[in-house]
Amino acid sequence: MKATPPRSTSPYSGLPAHQFWRRSISAVEHHRIDPVTQTRFKIGKNARVGTAGSCFAQHISRRIMASGFNYLVTEAGEGIDEPQRVRNNYGTFSARYGNVYTTVQLLQLFEEAFGQRVPRDRAWPRPDGRFIDPFRQQIEPDGFADEAAVIAERDRHLAAVRRLFEDTDIFVFTLGLTEAWRSREDGSVFSAAPGVVGGAFDESRHEFVNFDLAETYGALETFLEKFHALNPGARVLLTVSPVPLIATYEPRSVLVSTTYSKSVLRVAAEMALKRFDWVDYFPSYEIITGSFSGGLYYEDDRREVNALGVSHAMRCFMQNYIEGRDPKAAAVAPEAVRKASAAGIVCDEEIMDSARA
Image (cartoon, rainbow, N blue to C red; front, side, top):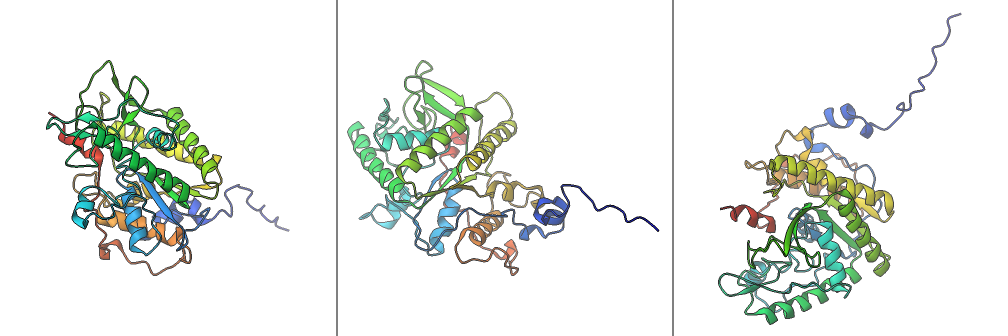
């Protein structure tokens, strides 16, 4: 009698298709690939959603607003006409902080808002005699009349930031960079290097820093702990920006610096996911940069994410995180018919490219 061959005892036997490249990537049309396999929470119509982070974070806020959900804006510029509101960056994020690229910036913003730190730098002069806020240097295109005006406006801004963290139900943060410029005197991280928009670079007072994993995750972990203590019912959704660095201060290729930066940010997000059960990760980075797309999700400059990429990422976001949506829905239109636009996205980092002599 012929013996029956033993059943496979491989630990990979019976695993779901999404854990295999050929089954979930190679065998699927690229515009139908969805790497979100499970979510820790859903976003309901009444949930107050706040956002902060890099340029790419604005795509999430736009889609939430366009879908009729409760996008929380605590600094909306009431009483200002619409063109001026847009020009002065009201409503770009939940509060008027501009891009918050690093986890250290996020932590310092939280601490300043709740009186846990007071930065020594308060206002910097511009070449035209106007003044800027060192921590959101491009927020007011016309600048401020004097230092007192900068401080008064920042106090109003910090009050709005407090309301945001106290009231939000879902906070979406997009990690963007590891490179930054900071004060040697108190460690404050600026939104751009001194001397680019305003102020003056002084090597004895300012320094370049490229945060490592310990620094990046350490700041993120501390922020999450403080935020949870303040607002224990809130949930946090982390993403990593798929937009490459526009410039690097490291003496090497910007391509190498981009890989380092995104790697650190992605690992920091993973560590937070493992540490906190009320934190989730949305793979917008993987959707845009994945080899399956063949580079089709970038503009001709190979940096800006185009409408096809935005559409794919946001479709996955809506299908998986929005309450009542079916993540297994089959009727998914190709990106070619989508009209998502990247126009009007505010990106403070771009000033670094224009600053090159």
